[in-house]
Image 1 (spheres, one colour):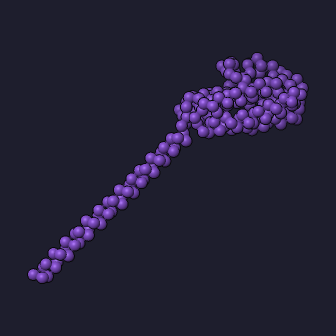
Image 2 (image 1 turned 180 degrees about the vertical axis):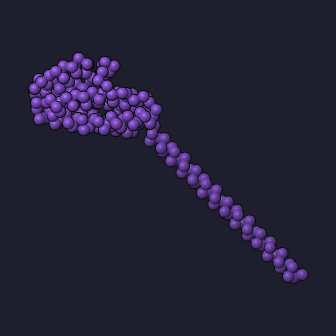
Image 3 (image 1 turned 45 degrees about the vertical axis):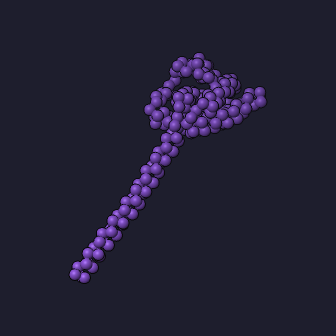
Amino acid sequence: MTSTRTRAVLVALAATAALALTACGSGDDGADTAHASHSAAAGATASATAGAHNAQDVSFAQSMIPHHQQALEMAGLAVDRGSSAQVRSLAARIEKAQDPEIRTMTGWLKAWGEDVPMAGMDHSGHAGMTGMMSDKDMTMLKQAKGTDFDTMFLTMMVQHHRGAVEMAGTEKAKGAYGPATTMADAIITAQNAEIKEMNKLLGKG
């Protein structure tokens, strides 16, 4: 009887211990699961915040891409035809800065599922955009030579840059996408500096 009673007590104690361990394990697992869920939710929220954009961001990218494309076309002419070393150097710097920005903005639009403006030589569709040259302007520039080319290029590019600075200012004020507003700020700083440089070359600085 004593032996039987002892075994019964031991079995009861073992069952109680097992239940206690199971309860503790369930509690820990629940805490871990809750922590993981919270972390995942926090990560998703942070990601969504970082990627948030609005209509202004889309408009900025869709407008600045063709604006930059025309600047690259003008700069390409100056690299080949500029009679001044300063003009050719400036044109090369414009190409170096704006080509990567076009690729970056194109990536944004694709990620957002928005239309990407196609590169082309016809500027009539963007004639009303701030600072854009008309097809007639571009034809005149292509036909100019020597110092006349330099003067025309610098005069047109000052106007072109001012348009870009205005567009970038709107993005800084109304945009929601961090990388876009950061690029807008960089455009304002760089192109305002280049405007001063070009005005100096034109004898206006």
